[in-house]
Image (cartoon, rainbow over all chains, first blue to last red; front, top):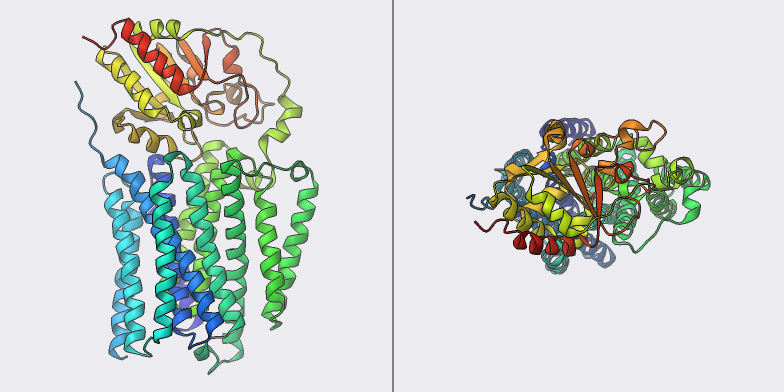
Length: 97
Length: 479
């Protein structure tokens, strides 16, 4: 990929983000923040790449593995916590008299 | 293009699409939960895509597999355990911690690539390409380090492990932070110039900058900071995407970065503060002790739970104003019992949710949803404010600054201009509060002095429990 096309990707990604998030009720801000935070753990892909390309370089393998651990901590924890919060919303309103 | 490249391309495209749909779905109550799962699915899809690509091209060494498995298991396990165990009240801290770890991950990737250049990036390395490589590594380290230390400080402050040191409220802090910033800039350019040893300087100084910038910020502003740091971790991920040449990483990082910025702006608006004043203004309480610590309370009316119950029984319309104190006391279920009783007596009950009630937007909604409060009873500030004059009783539970009339009447108050709930318009206001301590901003609340305000002192949960007893004695809700 040329640098210029990567910049285009960056620009369009940012615009997409702005547009997607534009209209959210305050109710969902905490879950949204937590969900978006989990997605930022996508840097686990970079950690994976690092490990695969390390070619037996042990210090690099360790750095990659620790990095992967941190990223997955973010991803797995983030999605679980978001789900826990949202589970409360999806519960049926209790019966009214 | 050979087959593995095509497969990876298609999977990446699909993952981006699903992630975008996931974020979009998270903005509607009905679809939010499915959307979250969709995003999680998209993330695992992206991992499968990447691994299958390497399996189809270069192959993955056994040694790599071992380290991949070790890292994934440990990280996922801790993440899952923490996510299951943590109480709902400490959501903000938890998000901060997760966020910091995301930043740390980007930092480590950049560090690894910088110290041990990946083999394929050495071939056909022209000057332009290597420059981009260095810049993205530096950005990733810089932003990643700030995200990590900033988030950890934010978490520690919210947990009460760290207080705000005195010197951070003086002008000294600007000087210190400028020194850190300039030093990181020097290290940044030195690194781009090819001086690899300055990488450690960059790591250390940007870590210190993250601490120095977050430490002076008061607890009330913390959600804004966490949201901003969330945006940073997206930027760090995008920078890491440039480092390892991954479009998927760049798109997802950019989306999160933009999302965090929007959310930050929304929160600032809710508190009537500009981002600049949040970041550089220090803690509100420190400024205000001089300017508007002027007031001693002169006209406090305190009353018993019994009186409160009697007034509630006679009411037609009751508005509940929840705040952080409710979350701390874990009193949401008890509150729900009280309101159920009132509803059974034909009293209209509504919850007024200030945009920044609690420590995060939506914090109160999550808390009340946990106690089975029907979603339709939660009213946002703009919707509920015109209703106060026609309301008989307002119950303020652990909220303070968001019901301070100073924000409307006193132009010298630091709160002035912040949108607040006009609870004083109601016939009677009961404030359930542990003592006369000030709210998070440290500012005196004029509401407490008003003649139609009565204070009910005590822990929110205990008061509400007593209230249930009193209401029972009055025969409320037992028809």
